[in-house]
Structures are given as structure tokens and as C-alpha cells.
Image 1: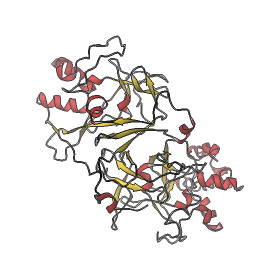
Image 2: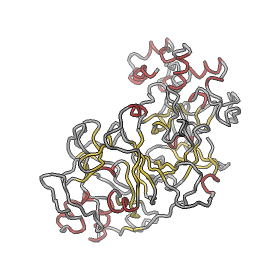
Image 3: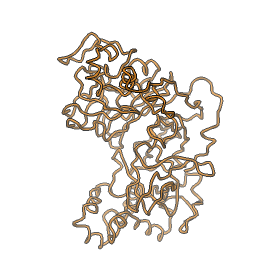
Image 4: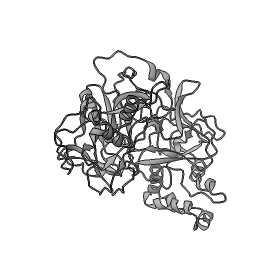
Length: 492
């Protein structure tokens, strides 16, 4: 996948606002969205123990560039959820406005100050998925956030499956606090709207300090002379450019040891953030059904818009990439439906790649997929995958008929696994990570092939997932890593 800098920097005239679609998975392994007595809310999809992270298996991010006309779109989440009935009362989308950001769903967010003169730079942003947690004076979730935000929601007590997640709004609001009649029903409910942190006594503030937002904590520390002030600043976002494609907001690479940057030719690609050894997991990425399709059901191109930067390697909020599903590393599931995987689709092709994407041991139905190093990777090295191992047939792509990867084993095209020679196919069936992770152990056959490719082979009578080399079978009986690779036999 190659994205030219011109795609990011060219400014085109537009008539009126260019709306963004803010991605909000309607279900994950942690929660589901449902309409309850207090409007939309988040409900636990599993039992959670006190002290656990409540969104451990969910997509989390902040987004501050909210304009009138933007929408929050509720997508299915993992592929498996696309076959379930939609939760009660939840529409396809809801409007997102500046008033929503400031008065109801927005949270104050503390960015690092690059000058180190201030405690941080304050701004207001939407938080996915936490923005849909309703208030309670006796909440079951709190956020021990530091500088950079409050994404780590922690269970303040045991939470049962089906119970609504709640948060205490009064620990996040400053002098502009939200005014409402509380109907949470908790024994300690304030009912009349409560007291925001700013209006509490000195003793109460000190007691509540560990539980309040990073912004309120920093402002209080400055007020009592224990720290520098907070700089409130309205960030400058890139001008929204109309390309005719839907603009989908998605988080950057924070939490992954990879970064997005331009090469010498001005193309954006993925690069390793540190050294990796052969067989090591390089990064995890989010996967779900392609969010936008035509009336005929075909996936359409999107403009991927990055959310707030969370780490030093993240690109600025509003950075945009135009993604055509036919031209990039967009995988398909076993039913040939195109899948969306965010910034991971920026990965470039090589006939001798340094990554295996997904593969044996993982299912299309998981929210999170993984990539593994096929060889030792040095920090700063461009990350590549073999498109011919990801897709069965890529002939609809304009760049399928040629390959310029320059590797010694270049096959000359990226048409898909179907068009490889028999020898080239057999070679890729033997690619894997097991034999590199555990020296002397042969790879499982088909380990490096996507479930989409494996399914097409199965239809032709070649069930690669049920086959393995005899040395792998005999040597893996007592090995935890090798035996765990067999748990996905139902993915064939």
C-alpha cells in the first residue's frame, strides 16, 4: 500500500462542512450499547472483577476535532457480531455536535506540553467508548488517569454481566459543569445536580484528588502551589478536504511498537518501533466488517482520519489517508466479505515479507488480530506482508499485475494466491512462525495463510488446516505455544 504525501497535503475547495464519521463499535467482548432508562448506555458483556480494566478488549480513543454535522456511527464490532440482532433502541448513527462535546459527552483531556512549561495542554474531546457511560453518584467504574487522558476505566467493584457501566460526572467537570437532575437511585444520590469539584471544600478536594480527572488534578495542584498551571489551548486541526469518500475517525498506533511515516519517495507506510526477533508478535490490530458499502453491497473507498495522538510516535490528529479496499492490504473473511483493519492496512507488499498477518491460531471473528515476525526485524525497518497470502484473488486491483518489491524471490505480481505457481503455493503453505519461535520444530502447514485463502483451498479439497508435518506433531505435545496453535481448528 502506498499513500502519497499529496493525498494528505493537497487542499481542495469545498462547499460547506466536510463531515467526519466517528467509529463506535456497538459490541465488543467487554460491552454492548443499549438504550436504557437514562438513554444510551454501556452494559457489561462479561463478568468483571473489582480492579480489572473494563475495556481491556475494546477499541479506545479520544477525538477533539468535532464539528456540526459529524456523526457517531455504530458499527458491528467483530465480524461475528454482524450476524447478531442489533441491540434494542440503537440506531445506525447519532449526530455529534459541539454542544454535545462541551455540555454532555465531552471530557477534558490533558495533552503533554512540549515546552514543559505547563502541567499539560487542556482540550475537550469525545472518548470512545467511555462517552456513553451514564452518571451515578455511586459508580462502578473510575478512571485513574494520568496525563494524556482517562481511557483506563477500572471496575470500582465487581460488575455482573448485563449490568450498566456508570461513572461519576462530578469528578470530571470543572466550573462549566453539567447541570442535571440526578436520577441514578444510589443511596448517596445528590438528586439536585450535585457539587462539582471546583465548589467543594479544601478537605473534600484533597480526599477526592486521586479519583478526579487529570485536568482537575493538575489545576488544583497549580491552585495550591504544588505544580505548574494548565495551558488551555484550542488545537489547530488540518483543513478538512473533500474527496467524495466518507471520512472515518480511527485511533493511531499508540500502544503498538510501530509507527507511520513517509519513505524517501513520500509514501506512507508502517515501520518497526523497536527490534523484533523471528517469531515474535509485532503488533495487534483491530478488525471488523468494512464500515461503508454501496447500494449493491460493495465496499467503497474511505478517508481514514487519525484521532488524538496518544504517544510520541503518533501522527497529529486529523492526519488523513485515502484507502481504496481494492488497492490496499484489506483482508477478506471466509465468506469473501472485505474487512477493515485501520492503520494496519498501510502495510506494504513483499514477496519475501518480514511479517505474517493473522494466520493459524486466530479467527476472523476476533476483534483483535496479530502480526508475527518471519525474520529478525531491526528498529526503523519497513514492515511488509505478502498480499498473495492474504487474498485469494486480487485481479480487481490496478496494481495486481506487477510487483516491484525487489526481493530475490519476487514472483512478479500481486494477483493473489490463486495465481501463484504450484511451487510458489506450496512454499507459502510452509511459511510459519512456530519453527522460528521454537527451534527445531517444523511449521504447521498453512500457518501463514489467511482464513480467506485457507477457505478457498478447502473448497478445492485442500484442507491445509488439518495437515501438519510429522515432526511438528511429534515434538509439540508438551509445548504450550505449539499446542495453543491448534485451538483454531474450527476456523477452517
